[in-house]
Amino acid sequence: MKWIVATALVLALAGVLAKVTTVAGEIHRQSQIDEAQPADAIIVLGAAEYRGKPSPVLEARLNHALFLYLKQMAPRIITTGGAGGDPVFTEGSVGRAYLSEHGVPPEAIVVERDAGSTAQSVAAVAEIMRRMNLKSAIVVSDGYHIYRVKKMLESSGLQVYGSPRPSAPPDRWQYFRQAIGYLLWRVGVTI
Image (cartoon, rainbow, N blue to C red):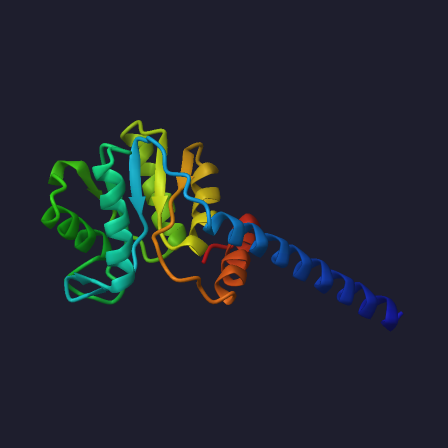
């Protein structure tokens, strides 16, 4: 009887590893595709900010969103991200300030400033877009992040296009980490 349980556990673990590997491959493929096309909004996923200034990662995401905005891919930009431990600034508000300083009219920028995770940001953005009657978006983030965010937004009925910021290829672990996050989300566990 013990060997049956052990065999079942090994087979289950092998199945989970196979699924994670398959999804990681899909994430890798998505990370290399720029699907940017006209949409209702450009969504910039938050990243760290330092005392009111965007981190290099957030700045690169904002610059890519600015590039798309200047190409008239969308009439508005949604910046996301909460305080992350900073008592004064949020990632979303830092993103708004940065874009405004670079010529985007403040009325073209919508800020989500409360989320503490990707799942919370996506849920808040989906609600913002629903209230504003927006149906499509270009998601700007790091390439490895796009797949999961697209799937989450698509589950809210939105048409979503990924546009990864220019960057060096990430550590392969990022693909597996995002695959695990995505698969957990699929079973109702948000991280």
